[in-house]
Amino acid sequence: QVQLVESGGGLVQAGGSLRLSCAASGSIFSINAMGWYRQAPGKQRELVATITSSGTTNYADSVKGRFTISRGNAKNTVYMEMNSLKPEDTAVYYCNADLVVPPYRYWGQGTQVTVSS
Image (tube, rainbow, N blue to C red):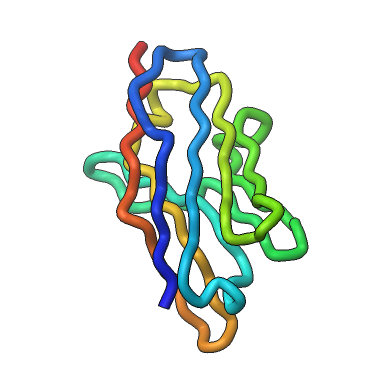
């Protein structure tokens, strides 16, 4: 079992910045990749960024150059620095952790990010 707790969401004006954090607890030794997804009202959940245990990152095209994902030294935390935010970035952001053995994906409870124009 892995528990994920997100923090850092909020309301920001367009062009502003926010930093999201996600802390994992439990069977963290089994975690491979961690990442962030988001879901806007009426839309499907979509990938924002992921980072593997070796540090390989992957970003959605819509956030490349604006968002940066990183992991803490203890490897059980993941951060996402979001700059130049746009109203279309408004969504609930979910942290996820992918386990290898057994293969399973855990989700956090989500944190709201609202970007006003």
